[in-house]
Image (tube, rainbow, N blue to C red; front, side):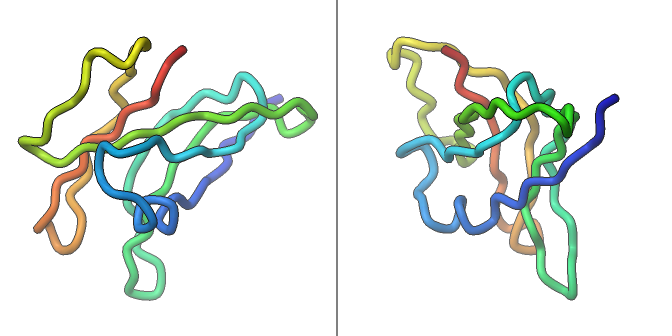
Length: 104
């Protein structure tokens, strides 16, 4: 049986600059990212990942999430690939973040 878990990555995004280094999210192995989005909680926007996981899975893995602003260079020479996850409008739609997962 699987469940959907939420991972709040707001603080991780606030602590990095777009395109500089990946955000590391610890998840159960084989978790399937289903959605990246914004959830408004008590008037604050939280950037979250929702993933389908096996809650009994003891093994964990780091997932590497990157984000880029519209018009920003996205390096293609980093020796791996990226999987597009979603595009988010944040800060009352003043910033647009394009979210990817680094693969390999």
